[in-house]
Picture 1 (cartoon, rainbow, N blue to C red):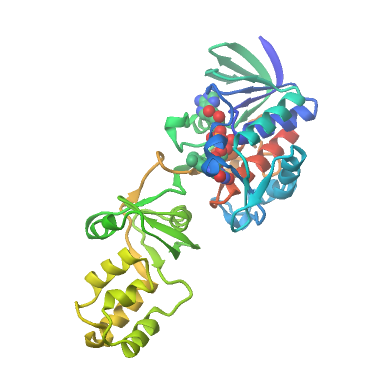
Picture 2 (tube, protein in one colour):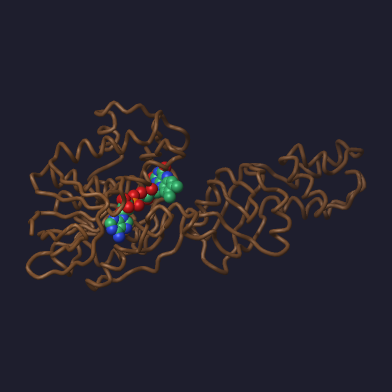
Length: 391
Ligand code: FDA
C-alpha cells in the first residue's frame, strides 16, 4: 500500500489547483479521477474558450447559506493571482463583457497549464480510476479498482451534480455525509427556466428571440440578455436569476430596461395615431415579440383608436412582467450545483472539515456558488489553493 501526504479526489478545476499547490509545498500528492481525461468541464466551459475568472470577483457575487464564508479563500488567492499564472503560461485572453475573462484560443490551454503545473510540482495523476472505499483510522485508507493507497490528508474535489452525462456525481456529498458533515440540499443553478400552460404557449413561438432585460428573482437582479426557448426562458439574465429562484416564487422581467414604456406608448399614440400598434411595438421590441404583445395585449386597431388604459396596462406589463416558472431544466442543463457540503462544517481559511482531521472539501462540492461569468472557476482556484496550502 503506497502512502501519500495528500490524496485529491477529482481532477477538475479545484482538484488540479489544490494538488498543484500542495505539490509545490513539497507534499507527496496523488490526484485521482474516474474520467479518462482531466478537467473535462474546463474543456467545454465558456463555449470552449473557458471564462476562467472575473476581474470584478467579490464575495457578494456568491450564494451560500453563509454569505461570508467565501471571503477568506477569495481574498487569499485572488483573480489577479490566477491571471498572473495565465500570463506566465503566455495564454492569450480578453475581457468579453462585465469583467469576464476568456481565452482567445481553446480552453484546452487552461487544462494544459494546470497539468504542467501539477507535473512540475511532482503530482502523481491517476485517471480512469474508480474509488471503491474510504475509511479513516490514524490516516485515510482509499481503495480503488487499481489498488489501495493511504494518505494523511484527503481532499474531496469531485464537484457537484451538474451535467451527469459528463461524469458528474454526488460522490463528494456522499463521502462528506458518511463522515458526518452536514449538507445544504443541492439544487440546479445557472439553469434555464421552464414554463407551463398559457405562458409556455406564448413563449414557444418566440423561441430564438433574444433581448436585453432586467430579471429579478428573490434578492437577485440581473441586467443582461434573455432568450425565449421551446421550454421557456434562458440567456444570461435568466440563468443568473435562476440561482435565486425557489419553487413557487415568481420571476419579474423588465423588457425595456432604462426606458419608460408607458410614456413611450402614449407619446407614439399622439405622434402617430394612424400607425398600427404592432408597428409601434416593433420599434421598441424584437419584431416577433412585438407582434405577440400587440396580438395578446392590445385591441386590433390603429394607435389613435386604442384607449390610454390598455396602453398603460401594456407599459406596466413590459416594465414588470411577472411570471411563475414551472421548474428548471434540471442538472442536465445546469451549469452549477447550488448547496452542497455545509460551510459551518468547514474552516474558511483552509477548507478543512472541523470535525474530521485531514479531510478537506473544495470547489463546487461546497455550498458556495458563484454568479455566471468566471466566478465559479475563481471559487475552484481560491478554495483549491486554500486547501493546497494546508493539506
Ligand atoms: P469539476 O466538475 O470541474 O471537477 C470534478 C472532477 O471530479 C471531474 O473531473 C470528475 O470527473 C471527477 N469526479 C466526479 N465524480 C467522481 C468520482 N466518483 N470519482 C472520481 N472522480 C470523480 N464556470 C466558470 O467560472 N466559467 C465558465 O466559463 C463556466 N462554463 C461552464 C460551462 C458548462 C457547460 C458547465 C457545466 C459549467 C461551467 N462552469 C463555468 C462551471 C464550472 O465548470 C464549475 O463550477 C467548476 O468546474 C467546478 O470545479 P470543481 O473542480 O469543483 O468540479
